[in-house]
Length: 199
Image (tube, rainbow, N blue to C red; front, side, top):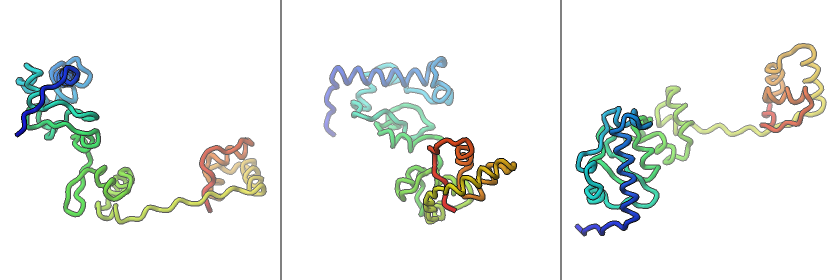
């Protein structure tokens, strides 16, 4: 294995800052992140706490746009359990991720969404509602309805219904538009939100 080059002064300073931050969140009860790290039993190994040189020797300099990530999130910061990772890799390695098994492969909901091209919130809603991951992926996304603008006659009828006491909600259902659009028609204000939905 090729020997690592010695870090530059700038890299060394950057590594010291990263190490100090790790130590603080794991070993200082006054640190704002302590509850999520040290409070859950996560610690920095004594080898790294005692020497930034040991930390650099084990990890090598941090590549640009990466930060330290624990491979097994139940274990601490120690050689063999840490790597340099991108923000996406870190996001997919969180303890609170929503995991699914899709076509025999375990992955996070975000990874599944990226793979199949469906928003992870859409997938989560479907799975929480009782669909399997395969069903959630196979279910087509409903097409957006084309906006329909109301005619002047329809607007006058809406105003008349409001005057006689019909609720905005009932009128919106009858005319196939958003409830907020009814308020704007009644108050004579231009509508800046979503256009009325198609009937």
